[in-house]
Length: 567
Image 1 (tube, rainbow, N blue to C red):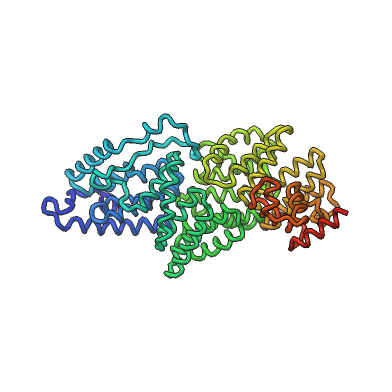
Image 2: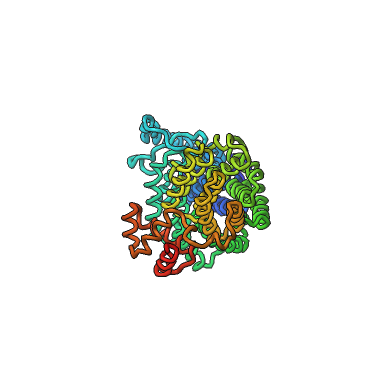
């Protein structure tokens, strides 16, 4: 193909065949130009165009620079990911995309070379048996994508003389590709090994691009701690090299990792820096992603004007450049702000198309994260039957194992839809799961909903305790609008004042009260854990909440308060 898309009249021999010694370097030069163009478009242009350029680069570089060809194909998969098309991601990763073959091999190599590629591929297919036979009798893995994807294939055997089209030679690239492909193909058990190897290799490799891949691999695994660590190392390397482009991308992974961890203030700081770095590099797509994360952080605080401003900027670029993931994050942020401000019907209307089946469904890596908000909005808006229809999707997502908060959110959503004789136990189950996974904001949301449920059943003392705990949680993470909702529930519950609601042992949950009394008696955290048959980590978490709720700073102050209120 010529640069304008027209087909060349005479096929170019490669590797010196038929006397063409200079054709290889010329093709490789075009490949490097296509790679540079595609990488630029990936971060600052329509991602569909970026994918086409990168696939062309992979084809042109395959003979002279196979490592660069592998990098081009993996970047093309990144572009496919941004569009939200699962099948496109898979075919790009596998090297089976028809468009890439037609635009690359068919017009640039001789008929004999093309025949050899086809023959080699057929031989590799015969030697590397598909995994569908091995997996036929095993139970289906949870499907977070809800799409039909082609079966996974094995890599080429060692005796094949090297990788065929689409197969990575670099062990790091191969592991990343295989892990990502396994997740997309609904075989998460086969993804963990390759992605863990990516993390292991990155620990001894300080290259920024490898660290960025490691951060992405950790997020795919649901290992937020590892994602934040890899992102921080990538950021340090980018700043050391004075490279705003790499800095913007590292901040993107860091901000998203902080959001997934529930650390919204830190996420906002990283995203604000990320916008500046992305604009300095001229990376509009990356800047849009940061604006979407700023909208999400603001939706925790309930600042609807800030959410609308950042979401509008993100959506403008996302719609022009085909950034499905960025668009879904921005829409979710807007809906969550509506929910924070007590407008569940608006949130329900906005989230319905994102989480329901059909062409308007959000990006496959994001819409599951919005499901708990949709269930809550639907129930509060008086549409519990619609919430019930997506509960199976949320259950599959929780079973997928890459979102640490999903099991607790699933229990909370089931409680919202359960009859009275089951709801209380489900709320308590959700809170126990929150204790295991952490996250002040999600736990506070569960406590607010449980407290509201208790109040409406006239269990006022229990409701006051639960709502008080929710208020502390929301105030700790700066969730102003959610805190306002909770104060309203406390007033409706008969609390004389917010100050009164925030003081005294009645402010504690039953579990927190038990822990406070044991500690006041002089028990260590380990001894408390043994008495309650819980982990020391759970006791640590509850004790921090006790100190915050009571406004004490030491075990001695806590003991004094318990003694005074016990008289």
